[in-house]
Length: 157
Image (cartoon, rainbow, N blue to C red):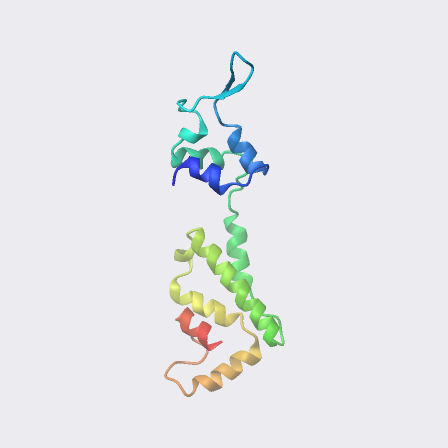
């Protein structure tokens, strides 16, 4: 995708990011006092490579570097509120899914391992639901309280 498409089709005019982008166009005043855009200038934003656009945007005031410690703490401390009614379990499910997305987006999955992700989700569930799942688990071939497949556990919950 070209920078031209990002700026002209992907940004909303009059918003700060668009104004920042347009501020990087090569402009000069013509002899008749009209604004001229030099589309051949390599420093004009429309001629930037995607890599330069990314670099310039990351060096701007719009970019906030991720706080990895906060992302990991949020993920590690998530748990469902007790007593664990349907609404509370649903909230926990959504919060855990969002935390998992952050862990994956920022490349932190290797710090935990795929199998431990399921166990972390299970450990955050309310006690009553875990007891029910243990009774249900007796009918299956896995050890209660030990879970290593996040997708299977999600379906079970």
